[in-house]
Length: 172
Image 1: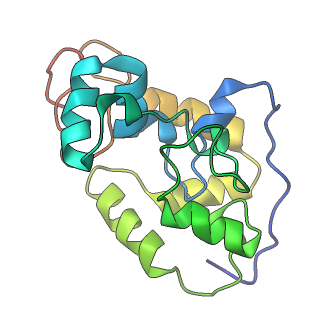
Image 2 (image 1 turned 180 degrees about the vertical axis):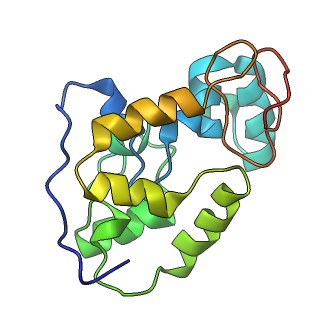
């Protein structure tokens, strides 16, 4: 993303901290991912996403980017194996997109960034916080931001999910 920046420290969170898995390598907050939320929250949503992704509901599962192993993709076959960003990281020995030596963002990141901006998530700002070693602060901020304004439960950051999958309330 910016070759002038140092790659940054290794991942700053304790390995036992489950929230570590929710730090997206591209700057996305995995706690607001439709696949992660379906896996954690909703059999109905898993069925819906299985239709969208042409798979079985049991295959709709993800613990977050850092639960996936770059060398073997994941602990079992399934989600993550088709993530082009994870594939790029694996091929180039990166942990985060901010470590990329290219001056300009790649197409795959740019497409995802535009999609996320439609829902109010700035991947660039998120990566900047992570690059600065402020992952704990960032995780707390994302956890607060991506909760339903009505029921307080975690919501999905996707233009297709304007309503809380828990209570149905419209989300700004």
